[in-house]
Every structure is written in structure tokens, then in C-alpha cells.
Image 1 (cartoon, rainbow, N blue to C red):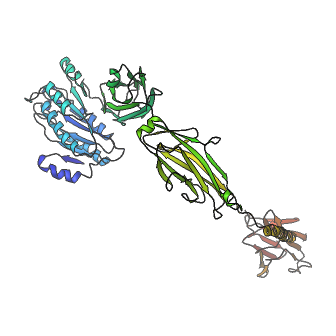
Image 2 (tube, helix red, strand yellow):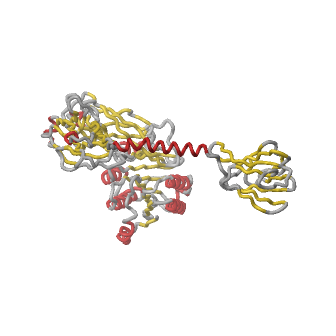
Image 3 (cartoon, rainbow, N blue to C red):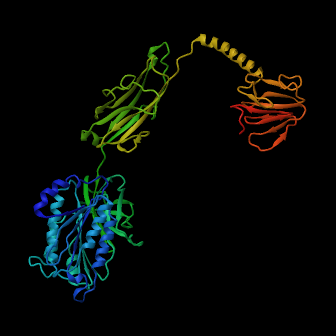
Length: 601
């Protein structure tokens, strides 16, 4: 989306864009400002090299690589700033619009007002930044092929001092002179100031930006181990990858440590800025330093001046003190997890329905002095089939309901199970949760809750047996088993029968012979059908596995069978399985086998 930043329309623009400028979660926190010299010399006038298309291409390629969430500003200038343009990148269409805008720029102006442009662009960027709900870092890219010959109020030193005074905490000025020899004086001026890079190039290199994604690292309490590791993440923006041998230098700066004769080290002190880097902070000569919290920075520096690092500082902190600790212990002779065992709620003695397990709590001296309380909660495992009435059947005696707070005066907790005959049988599981942001919770057998570093847990379980079976049920079981056995034997001795077998006579007459419910049928001489035929045969039901098949037995004469999946007649010798769609031929008779169940696989 393109926006012209003219003063008269500024209020209207702010209102219209208030919703679109809200940063989204996990979106970049860096914006980009391009101060591009559009004087005629950039396009080859007055004997200069035509460098302008290369500048346009480098900016276009970089913008196309950006993710949604960044804004891009353009300040084309010659003897003045021609216009101030802002684009918000929300989609690929926005990137294409920026590309078209860059392509539309023409280098045909006179003179070069570099310093005035830096001053005006910084004012405009700061005005934009004040309206953003979160902190934004901006990288300023200056592309020019000459010295400033317009600005009267500023020179190089004063404009750089002004930039450092007014810039954002992590803003960066990347100043590129094209086609000019390196200027020793300018190099010295830029080198003496922070967050600035001065580069002279005869060709325009691709833009590469390494963004530090985690701006704050807390290394925890280093008193016991004197070292701790945290993860930092980086994102490389640009179409060109980093050189394979590229390294980023990191240096820890903790002024308070140095004043006490100690210092911090970071490992590794140089590395390739991949997506994830493990950084270990360790202390040297720290045994005598004062207890407390120490804050410093981790400075990042690029070994390649063509690679921009922003933010180039990570806010770092650690504590050096005895942790306020709470130790959670089981009762003597017990261990975690808490196994309440089996509680027979059907026993005649109701006093056996209650089971107790003790949990001891010890606050150390630092925890007592802190006055912090420990939150205690009781939960059931959601995977249990049956809910348990927590706060009634299962309680912790020192808290109200299923959660509460305890302090250093609490030395012991009791997990109490109160059974009753209405409870469903089975095993119930759950946890006691101990939670605090300020207290370190320790203890053998306690567990960490996933994704909750301030929560530790103790598992518990209790079983309720099934209700005893009445004696009359045991007397009834043999009778039921005998009856089942009788029916199974009877069914096994009964011959199998056809469920839906039919014979459809096609020739010499049309009729139907239904064999459903029959176990066998005789045909031909002495049979039920086709008594005039010279052929005698039998169709019989036979069980194979769980299936009932129809078996054709030839007793006398010759029979032909045309299978449903075949094209030729075959002579039946002895016996043959028949299926739906088969055709039996004997003498002048032609019979079709019909069945929904007897299908050929």
C-alpha cells in the first residue's frame, strides 16, 4: 500500500491506517528507509557511470524478499526531497506496487542535498514511529554518487551527530557512495560513531540484513553454576544468502561486574547467525561479587561491512544470589508419586474408607524473608474415564476447595481420600500443582509441568475395587453356561442349509426350484425333479470355515458347467462348487444358479 506523507493530509492518513499499522504477532519489528540520489549523474550524465538501474534492482530484490509486517519508506532527492512515500507490506501485491514505484523513479535532477534529506527523513520516521503500538527499528540506506553541495545548515559531522542523537535505540545508517574512491576522512568520521557504516562501491551489492529476533535474554541465577545457556534466533533478509564463511562477533558488556573485578564471557564469541544459536554466558572471578541482579548488553558486530546487523545489541541480565527455595518432600518412608493404594469402599468398616498421605514443605531463609506464598492446586488427569469429586472425595487439608495459598508457616500438607460406596470402580490419577514465579521449587520425585516453568507437580493415584458379586450370581453362572453349551452343541450337530439358493430352469421349460432352507436336494432318476432325465445328481450344502457352499455331486450321467466368469463349458466329474450365475447343462436341460450369497470371489 502506497502512502504519500504530505503534512496537510497527515491526520486523515493516521485515522485511515490506524488498524492496518497494528503489528501482528511474530511479524518483523524492523522497517526500512531508502534515501536515493536522483541527480542526473546517477544515470550517467556529465561522464558518470550509469549506476542508477543497479541501485533500483538492488532495492527491488530486497523488498521482494521481505515478509508481511514491515514498512518501507522512500526519500528520492536531488537539490531537495522530491517526495516522501510510505508502503506497508501486507501482501505480494504490496511488494509489486513497491517494485513498480522504484522502477518509475528517474535520475534527472540537479545537485545533491544529502544532509538535508537525512535530517528530514529522520524527522518523518520518528513521527511515524510515535504512532506505533510497539517499538520499531529502522534501517536508513543512503545511495549517492557525490558529495552534498546544497545543505548549508549541516555538514557530515553535524548531521551524523544529529542522527545519533535523534535515532531509535537500534536504528542504523548504511551510507553507500557509488563510483567514488574511498575517502579516509569520511571513514574516520563514520568509524568514530555508532550504528553507522560507510561503504564505497563501484558495483551495487545485494542488500543483506540480519535481524536479531530475541532482543532480551535473561540467563537466570548464576550463583551456583556460574554459567547458563539461552537460545537466540536470527533471520536473514534479502535474496542473497550470507557468505558461507561469514561470522557474527558477539561481546558481553556488564559494567557492574568490571567494577567488582569480575567479567562475563560469551560462548561462542563468533558464529554464523543461523535460525537458532545457543549462547552460554559464564562468569569469571565472580566469587566475591555482591548479590543482586546484573544488567548489560551483548554487542553484535558484522565482520562484513556489506551485511547490516539490526538490532545489533541484546539486552542481557542475570541474578547472583541464593535462590528463595521451597522443598517438597514425602513423609518418612514414603516417596513420590503418592500412591494411595486400593480403598475398599464396600467394606463394612467405614473407617477404612479414609486414606491420608503427608507432604512436607520447607521454605529456606531467603524464601521466608521474601514473604512470597506458594500456590497449591489439586487436579485430576483428564484421561481418566470417570470424574472424581475433588474438594469432597479428595482434598488437601490446608487449602480451600481445589486450590489455595500457603506460606512459610505451613510445614505439612495432608492429601486425604474420603471414600463412599457410590464411587465408581477404577483407578483415578491426578497431580498436586505447586506454583510460584518468585520461588524455586525443588524436591526429589517432583516433576516439571510442560510449557510451565514456574509449576512443579507431584502425581497421585487411588484405586476403587469393583463391588463384590452376590452369591446367587455364582450359583446362576453354571446354569447359564450349561444352557449355552447345549445350544452350541445342538447348532453344531445340525446340518448346514442354503439361505437363498434357487435354480432357474431356462430350457426346455421356464420354472424355478427354490432350495432355501434345504441342506440337500436330489435330481434325476429317483430324485425330486428331472425324473425323466438320464442324469442323476445331488446339490448339497457344505460348511467351509464360516461360509456355506453349494456342492454339485454327479452320481450318474454327464453334466456340463458354464461358470459365471468363464466362456466355455466344462465337464463336471465327481463334485464341483457352484455359484451365482453358473449354468448347469444336462440332456436338454439348462439351469441357472441364482443366489445373493453364493458369489464367486
